[in-house]
Image (tube, rainbow, N blue to C red; front, side, top):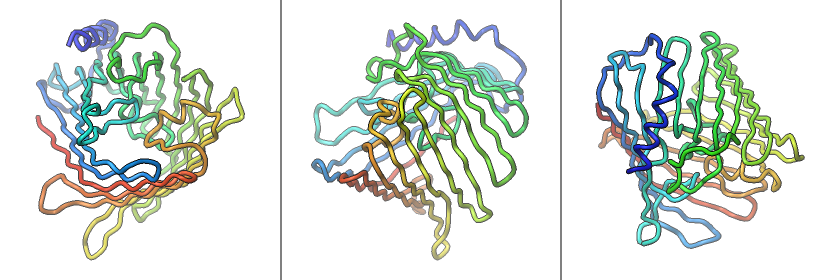
Length: 315
């Protein structure tokens, strides 16, 4: 609790001078979101596991237009990129506060200060895990209606969730990312990154068809070593007998020398050639609940995941 309060105070002090008018539409007060998941995890290189995940997102908004807020993230799991506990494993029952930060939004973008998220919006296959954190500051600037500039400076050093709220001691994380939508079908991102002791160039191109399908290509290239991660995939929605379904599939290659930059990404399984596919759909009998089935393979390691998830919002 002491670390949590310390982090909130750390968040609040530098950002007070940034207040501006906001166009957002939100009432002052407390709100939260709760995401729950239960799954069966069967990997070829270890015994199968029954697991559960709790993600809790509390938010305190301080003005009627919603421009100032304190946000947090409380989640199960014991690793930067892991948020699942294993049922029956007494050493696995972990839950930690992983983020605590102040956010200010305005007509020109947003500012986040504190123990902040690893992402500004959607998480890419080449992006850092959505369960992770960075100690620092993010400034997102809306250059125009279709383009954003995202600048993050801070520390990414400790990957133990028990130490997530430690205040930064050095600025070893720098990211400058440009995102733009060319038209209704084409968009891309380009970023320069300094993290995990390396320098990286990341690029992403997305092509959205008129049939609710999106084709994407992603590349992380380490600039100080000849190593990279490449991703190519397809995601979208379709229906069978009027039942809506969502899918996600991609091929990836991760070279061994790319280091922790790959290990801290979403759903990392191993280096080498890999393939992943997921299918999910709504459970009509229960609001906001869905089922999912996922299959991953990286070289000689295979993995099957299946389960149910539910998301609950509360104002």
